[in-house]
Length: 418
Image (cartoon, rainbow, N blue to C red; front, side, top):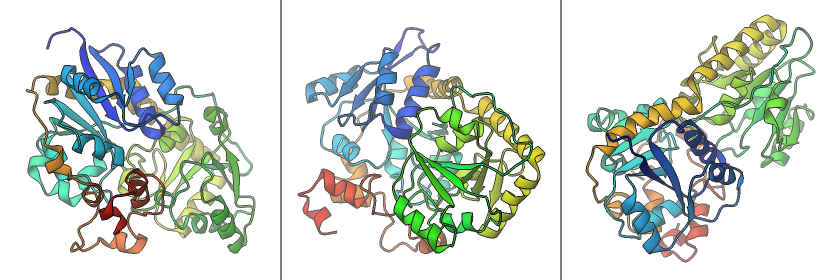
């Protein structure tokens, strides 16, 4: 491959949240590569932190340009990188325009283990389809297809630890300090999160909740019902999370077994700060946390309570786990490593011919079809875990839920019939 600069245009609904952090890390890690990154946004940015940071690195960002401009951008790009999750704006863009031939690399930001399902046709027709966690390969509709698992796929994590890690002093005695970061939507957080925490018998045990305060009132009611009204403390958004984490000891990161996540930036950030993670045995989390080495894996509230109390009694073991966790993230989840792994795929994709992708054929031709393609078929028998936890929740206003699609397509009869 020529050493002249190659052009990658990223197609993404926005640069907020986890995808914004991932793409910023990719840009920062790509400084020594021969690939230039630019971005085509499908909606106006609301959260601009990562937008501004990426722009400060000299990357061009096009906020939903007119058709002639985005056709030119795609035509002139050496590689088109699709940032995939089931966002309605992505379906609308891909399936309502006649897009030019491209070398398509898709980076998938959902696990696909449970709904939202990853459209198999998109996996097959991408020049390269990159999962963000190896746990995605466990999905039956992926694991059972040799042409997918042995063909054009790969795994590159989109997660990174903290850029700056304050020197921490590990606890020698005294009560454990626990925290949680991330969304409080029960499509991600375990619906019995309070039940797990309330099982801890230490009278001073409480968890500080950083960031998102959705479902705050419901969680506080659950604490009161459990007889522990002071179990949770809501700290809101913290600008300097590294300093906040430096004073914490453990990270009870107990997620819904049918959650959609993969890279888990909050988990990696806590680990990089030396905070000991305690997670459930969900495929995504155990792909990151090595039980007994970089954190602890539990299965039920009783076991959770036991390990919390054990860590409280054994500060030396807590320190060992914390140091191991920080070292693991530092060695495996850095921008340079992400860019290095992705560059290998870029080099392969660049050798391929551009092709026209029949997105409508792969994804559907209308909003109702776009919504349904990431759901279980009505005739499909639900896995036991989805029967227990209800599968993908449509209560959220975002995350590709029915409410989200209806917001984008309020007059669509197919969606309204649902």
